[in-house]
Image (tube, rainbow, N blue to C red):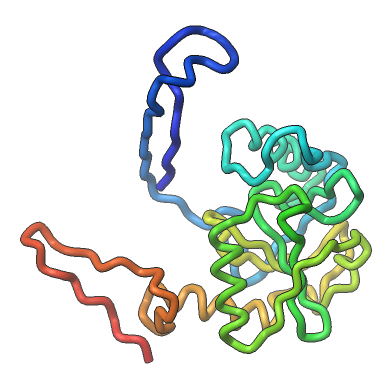
Length: 225
């Protein structure tokens, strides 16, 4: 499901009429694995793109705005042209930013590393959820600038996003990451994440909303074990 806010009617121009209310549209469709069948288990091959993320004080990278996805399109198109499933972008300082449509986590010596918000990333909801789940499982999560070369020596690498969910990365620029497959920490976090949907992970954060039927009766969710 996808929702969008549009500023519609009013005068013609770049800014439009700021006094006009925003219009909201919601679209829903069936969507398979975003990065291909088997990606959640087998992982994907990615490359570092020649396109950089937007610089600070240009456009607000923290906004989930349609215009920001022009950058994502360029990154993905280049990656696909080169035979990769997805592309990763650096920021203007040369540090790792994020994937074309995903945030990035790196496992090194048992700790999780992820780029900070200041690295021109979108502060994704799935990124935040994975961070909290990891911390609740006793994993240390560190937000810091990540140099490109750290990608190549990571023990595990995975991307997160609404569509990508938690997708392992098995290689970057044809350099194998870890054992070239989903690592144990990535798999553990996947089980915790997807367990929220089937009841095998307890909702300790109050993220889930009850669903009621047409008569107002609450539909029971499977019990966590």
